[in-house]
Length: 357
Image (cartoon, rainbow, N blue to C red):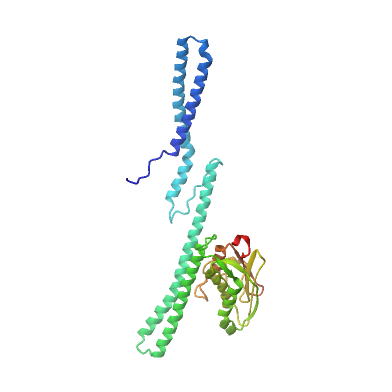
C-alpha cells in the first residue's frame, strides 16, 4: 500500500454532477408524462417518433444544462479559490494581506469577512509574540552583560585583590539571581497560558487566604525594612485549581505591592467568598499610576505603565496573575489609587460553586 490519499472529485464537479442528475431526471419525467398523455391520440409510428424526439431534446438540453452548471459553479466558487490562494500566500511577511471581498453580501462575503477577522487576530498575536520575545531577550541580556562586564574588568586588573574578587562575585551572583528569576517567571507564564480555558492539569482545592498569608510571611523582612503598615482581613476563600499557579498568583500580588511601595507606606490585603465567588484584594500606596496606564500593567515587561527595562522585578508579575486567572475561569482588575498606588482585585469561582466541581 502506498498510503496515498484517494483522488476525490472537486466541489465544482460534484455540484455539476448533482445539477446534471436533477436536470436529466426532471426532463425524463416530463418527457415520459408527455408521451403517456398523448400516445393514445397518436398512431404507433407517430408515438414512437414523439418519444425519440423528446429523448433527443432531453439529451441536448441536459448537455447545455450541465455545461451551464459547470460554468456557474466555477463562477460561484471563484471567491473560495481567492480565499485559498490568500491562505497559501500567508507567511511572516505577508500577514497584512486581506481578502477584501467586495461582491454580493452572501455566504461567501461572510466567509471572507470571517477569514479577514481571523487574520487580524493572528497578526495581532504574532506582533505581540515578537514584542514579547524581543523584551524577554533584552531582559535576559542585561544581567548577562553585567556578569560578563564584571568578570572581564576584574580579570583584566592585574592588581585586583581578594576583596575585589569578592565584590565581583557578589555582583555576578545578584545578576544571575535576576536572570534565574526571569526564567522562572517566563516558565510560570508559559505554563499558565497553556492552561487557559479551563484545561488545568491539576485541580485541587486551594484557599487564597492561606496562600496570601504565606506570601506575606515570605515578604515580612522586606516589609519591616521599608516600614510598611500592613492591614489584613483574611477570610476563607476556597477555590479549585492548580495550587502551584494559585500560590504564585497570591505571591506575585503581594510582592508587587511591597516592591512598588515607598518608605512607611501602606499595604492592605483582603480575602473572602460568598458561595459563588472567592476573591483576593491587594492594595498598596506608592508612585502615581495614570488610569490610562492601568490596562498596560497586565502586559509582559510593563512596570508602572511604562515599558522599561532594568527596573525592579521582571515586569511579568501581573501578566502571570492575569494568565492564572484566565486558566481558572476568573477575572482580575486594577484601580489606580488617588495619591499613588494600586489596588488589584482577583475574582475566581468558589470551590463551593456548582461549576467548580
